[in-house]
Image (cartoon, rainbow, N blue to C red; front, side, top):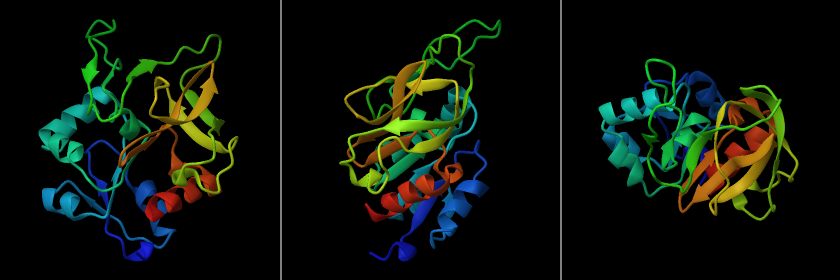
Length: 209
């Protein structure tokens, strides 16, 4: 399929600034639709799950919009960015109670294995913000033309532990999952839309899956 003719839907989670994501795909010749409508999501060729903010707010919005069963049932390729990737995991500890102490784990979509943990970075600063390298075995089509060691732009304090579904890792104090893949679901902890040529290539690769 000509990628410019694909129906790409950016799922409107209600807590994400979607303009930069939309423009990143427009630069690749695709006109994405931003929607939370069931019919749009079901009829899409590809889906994007963006995320900005906290896991608590994001999952609350997905549940209120009735999107959780819809996303879990998706058969087309879906790519989550940043918090959008984290929401694919089993649960997140990004939950604080009213007095500032750590609360219970927040249930996420449960599509990819593993939990989202506060990063253990030693003397390094949180959030992990800026350019960092990802490491992978250079075999997956999502990473075609992106050499291991390429730099991407990160902004986060929580991360998915490394699991059997990890496609690429990054190291900031300790290794964490930079890209995850399970069946037709993919996630990138970094911001592809802010990662220059390497980010654009990853988005192009996703369109070509």
